[in-house]
Length: 385
Image (cartoon, rainbow, N blue to C red; front, side, top):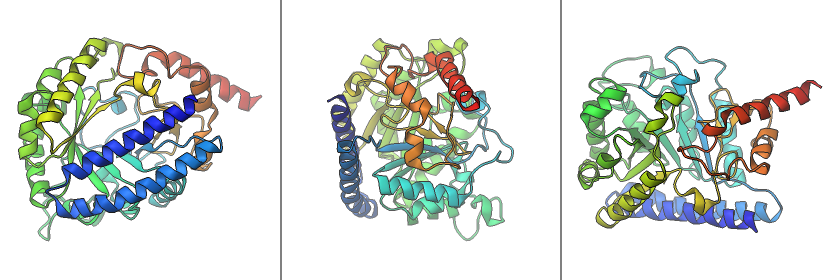
């Protein structure tokens, strides 16, 4: 019964997202046409997941894939930098585009409808983005810092700086409407530049204007802390984004990179405030899709990581519970996607109730880091014995 309720909750969530995106694309004909076709593919994917559920196999509708460990920025409070899974140097055993494409194909066959592409900076892997663009039955939100979209060629083009023949990154998104750029922003110029570097806010505004001029559907991602919550949920913030052509805002609760910054994470009172503000914004900003992550975990019966609603694939192919719990006992370089979903670590986390307990921060597993490590050590020791 619990699995059935979870499946119904996830399917309703997917339907709401697609409905919101279709509504947000009403002034963008090319994206609207694509989303009508995608909605049919999403219904077929939901049917695959329901069939699997009846056969005792749970398939999450979402995946998160960090397709590169490289990044051209070093933002303050970056979780990937803090746990050394991200950097400015060369890839460390990163997967080839062909391997990622095989994972995308497996995901489509199983009924996964959304794969969030992250990094590092995902635009540093145009080969993977092009492969993703070919999979029109999957929606790929591309979480980017936004600094490589305009006035630059793609990294594998052999050029650098302004592209006199046109902006290759913009064209990539224009040609592949299933790739949805999601730009990271912290609020106003002061807060964005303080975290991401001087001049980044103005660069983002230029990028937004360029995306709007090309009629490319895009959104933004905001890391919500106690310090910026009021600003980024204010009417003026969403109104400005709307005027710039933004049609989706994803609010992501801050997860501390260490215990010293734990005080910045939203608490239950903050979540209630944010939920009330988003309800109000949805009434006034009807042309925008507003999403809160992780959202109301009480409604979903707990954290959706470790395969309940999604899991994370790191740049080397490791299957991790989520980006904020970077521990893996299974590699997609060795096993299929379906086998990875049944990893011993994922099963242990789901069966022992680690995902359904009460927690104070934005991530249930962040507070259980030592427990996750002990589980992993035990699993690895069992392999040795």
